[in-house]
Image 1 (cartoon, rainbow, N blue to C red):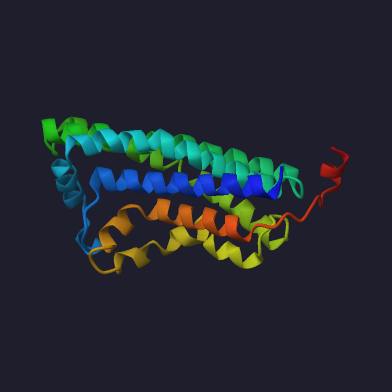
Image 2 (image 1 turned 180 degrees about the vertical axis):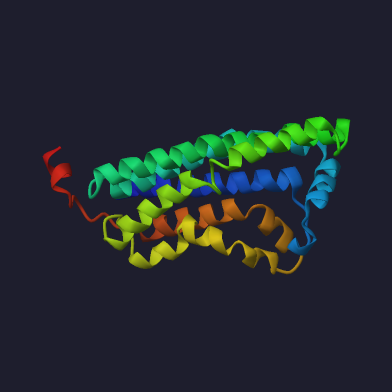
Length: 226
């Protein structure tokens, strides 16, 4: 695949992360400081969200994740010729993360309607949060994205991903750990940035890789024989 097509896939991933970020804002986004964030404040935000925002936010899940999956295909194309086996493991890990992420994202639409109709203290809300906790143990804050990100960092440091080594500083495994930075961002940007931090760093990662990628040709003897 040509470098131009690979970059197009990477920009699709960036667009997908932006769409998912927009979905987060539709579900519970408000302007303000992240310092007001708490479980009770989150429930009060969801209770005030208009019904059309819940419907539209639910649509952003499959649309945004579909675009993001294309971005991960682009990441795979960057690495597959130099390290086909590791690139395959990386892609499988990222796809597993996408599966659980889209399920997790899809929870918030029903959650908003349940809060509006049954109240924030209902057993239905408690069960939705229980399911959400089960999903998030396996997705972006769990091992799937971490594994894919660590493999990408390793390949980048070895010069096998077609991007400069300094780009590892934008890798999700690293930037997710500095989420607390968003907590200190002043209003009005702090609160939406805190709520959509995961998608913000994903969009930044895809964009940096798309801007810095250079096709270095086949480096793997296995890939050459294939």
